[in-house]
Figure 1 (cartoon, protein in one colour):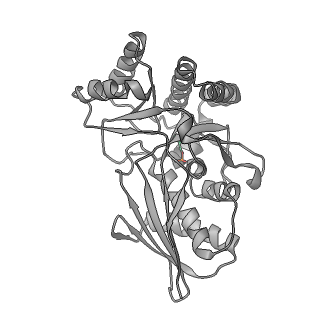
Figure 2 (spheres, helix red, strand yellow):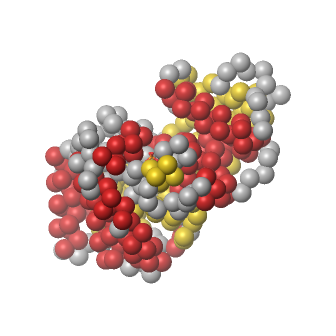
Figure 3 (tube, protein in one colour):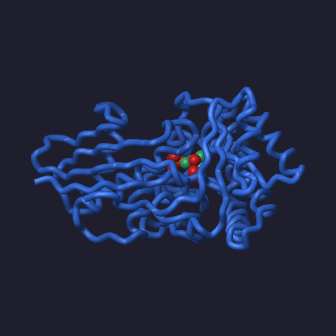
Length: 325
Ligand code: PMV
């Protein structure tokens, strides 16, 4: 008999970035990070543990996968099997309502939904904190897609200590992420390889050394709903991560010419009074974080730029949740 559950999780955008691991195997991050879940975007994943299956199966957006994607999911299912005390193989069906590999991190929502669905389908009770540590082993940023709203991921020195928790719910602050999509092409170097090469940059040590201070400033700005303070630290932290990427061996340049154009525009719009700032993940797309009242103006401005192929809006999102069993 198959034991089935379906979970839904949002991607998240980091305000203070995770880049590089202190422990590659346990995926203990080099620095703490903080992010906002993105409402309206999600991965929905159905897991069926099934004793009659000879091997794990993966259907991604309706297409059966056999290569790298299945291998990565199967490795995570091994982690879940060990933790849940199961031997059965699983059938996994996963659907994203947003394009993959475009700078909107699909690995975060995918591994958060997979972890929650796999645990729920087993029937074994599991705390939110444990779920975040297990999701982390699939993809670091997935730990932050389990709790609701604005979420901090603690570095930790051991598996159980490296967990994520909500610092404020989605209703706390009406921020919006207005994502300027410049390219829907799949990125050439994924974050996985990037984390491994972070230490080859002379700048990584300095970035990591200041991360706890930036995180404290960012958390305070969120708790006080202080946009000016948030904007300063969010842009600084994104610039620092990209400086590390560009100075790693081999160097990683994620920006397109349009990326720089938009970063410049965002700074000008803010100087002219709009409450907006930028942050970028491992891709060329620019996440414009703004207050809700200014989101429509930002969307219109971005849509008028020739470099922008699409614009997505997302409010703060809730926790990963079970949607069917
Ligand atoms: O979780 P990963 O391995 O996909 O890494 C995420 C890396 C960034 O998106 C660039 C930063 C972050 O903290 O989300």
